[in-house]
Amino acid sequence: MKDFLEQLFEFDYVANQKWIDAIEEQDLTSFSEIRRQMCHIINVNHLWVNRLHEKVAISEDWDDLPFYSWRKLTEENFQLTMDFLGNESLDKIVNYTTSEGEDQQKHAKTILYHMVQHATHHRAIINKLLSINQFNPIELNFIHLND
Image 1 (cartoon, rainbow, N blue to C red):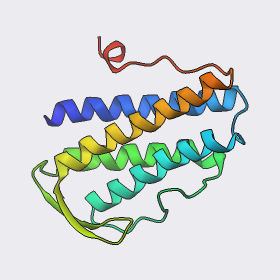
Image 2: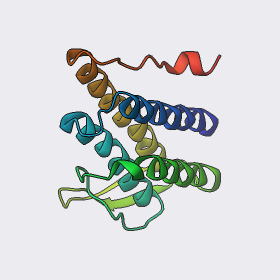
Image 3: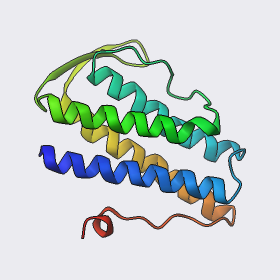
């Protein structure tokens, strides 16, 4: 399962980079809802990876991030996630406080899978926003990246 999660996070990293490229190439960095969704992906990955490492996150779910930081933060999130996958048990119980202030605990593998699913969901929203506003959506499927 660890190998599969590593593949998922490699895909997730590439997908985020491709969405950032598309947003930049189509000059959409100030399109408020697209920007909001991409910042949310980056922020939530940051929150979860810090919870996995038992550290305090420096951003909240919906914080606006300057465009120039998106690639760097995406890279940092990816590296911290891969570090966790390389050094920790997927069965590790992670205690954390939700954004709503509730104390929770989950297995690391559950959190990791949620992280990928969450990002995929929000990239789909971005693609829908691109389509309905006559911009070019991104064609990227996990199956094609892993042939």
